[in-house]
Amino acid sequence: MKNGKGQYTEAASFYEMSLKIERKTLPEDHPSLANTYNNIGGVYNDMGDYSKAVEFYKKTIKIQEKALSPDDPDLALSYNNIGGVYNNMGDYSKALEFYENAHKIKENALPPNHPSLATSYNNIGQVYDNMGDYSKALEFYEKALKIREKALPSNHPDLAQSYNNIGGVYKNMSDYSKALEFYEKAHKIKENALPP
Image: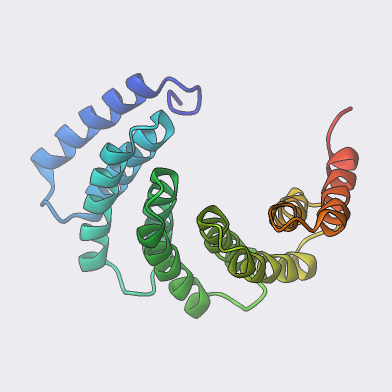
């Protein structure tokens, strides 16, 4: 609740108290500890303390890699979380490594048009976009869009996100007419979905 309200310091304090209790009663590699480490990592990520977030996400992954099967969706989520932190830190090679690990698990566990795969493609595209590799960014953003167009209703906010991301790549590539085309698609969805 505290985290949801943006009261990150208090949220971290409560999670740390929970961790203290769990560490007295559970073995160091218990999956419940992984969940608590993940929650603490999320709070530090929200606070912008990325080195602390990485520290706790690594603890999560260390436990999960021992306790879970290699294709468990919870492990994919943890890889995704740490990939996001590395992306925020500007460590794009690490971000790609973890995003790709998450994507491999999702690819094996989910049907080919699952929206979660689109999110993976979008995240990988975002890293390439941040690196200035616009052709690779476009490739992954288009894969995300293709899945979203099949799997989601035509007014879904994730579709707007895809259109917006593709528009941004075209803008960065100085193809302004294509950028405008995709930005207008995104705007149309948002105009219909959001209050004025």
